Each structure stands twice: as C-alpha cells, then as structure tokens.
Image (cartoon, rainbow, N blue to C red):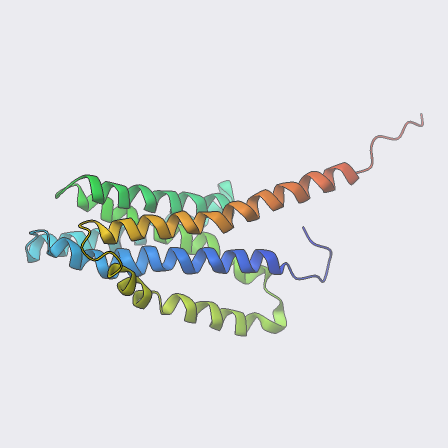
Length: 204
C-alpha cells in the first residue's frame, strides 16, 4: 500500500507486462493460431467449429465467475489461476489429440476470461485519475495487436510440429514472472508495514 496521493507505477508496469504477454499467448496463439493448427491435424469443419466454440464458451464462463473470485481470493490469485490454467491447456494440446482438444480449448478460454477480469479492473483502479484515459487507451492498443505477434511467433521454429503450443506455454511462463515479482514485492511491503505497527501499550 502506497501513501495517499502516490501512484504505484511498479504495479501498473507489472500488470501491463502480464497482460501483454498473456494476451499474445491466450488470444494471439490460442484464439487465432490454434484453430489453424488443429485444422492442419485432420479436423473437419464441424470439429473445428466445436473447438473454436469451446474456447469462446470457456472465456464466457471465466468472465462470469471472475468478479466473484476477485472478491473471494483476490485479483492476484485470479490472474495466477488464469495463467496456470492456460499453461495446463497448452500442455494438454501438445500431449493429447482430438477430442481432448475440446476441454483444452475451453480451458484456454477460461484462463483468458479469469486473467482479463482479474487484471483490468485492478489496473484501472490504481491508475492516476488524470492519466486513466491515456493508460486505458495504451493498454487496449497493446493487447489489440496481440494477434500479429502471435502469428509471427508461430513462424519461429516453423518445422516443429508443436510450435504454437510451445509458444503459448513460453509466453504464459514469461507472464508469470512479473506477476510473481510483484507478489513478492507486495509481501515484503506488507511485512515492513507490519513491523511498523505500534505494539500494545505497556501502561496499565
């Protein structure tokens, strides 16, 4: 917790980093590249539609339950669950085949919904009021270009069979780093503040 009137730019920077990396992984890879990848592995039009629908259904569920989870376990934990769920989903995509790709797609969408609602209200709440509009515009622009680097990363190691799922896992793993660093800093601040709390008065 910062003193009144001070802006927590470290948290704002960490949340933006998490959002950008996970948006490239969850949307740029998960929603844009993965449907093309699964179509190259023998899925017909009906199966491809089921997979894509599972992703959007998972995101809808995540968007619906995330506000309640924010209240129960906190924004930071909701973001972590969303990132870890997406990593699990990409691992499932790499190690299984149809029809298990359907729950994996739903888990990618669920993770995106949780991360989205866990992160953005927190970010906008701590942004300075005089710069909130610019910050929101900057943040939304960054996540809006996610499909482009996602498609570009798919071409890195393009001869590898599982390149999209590997790229997705790596991006989410990188997204966990700023989140973990922020959580560690928050714990240090809380411990420091707790030591500053006045103890019980020895007077009768």
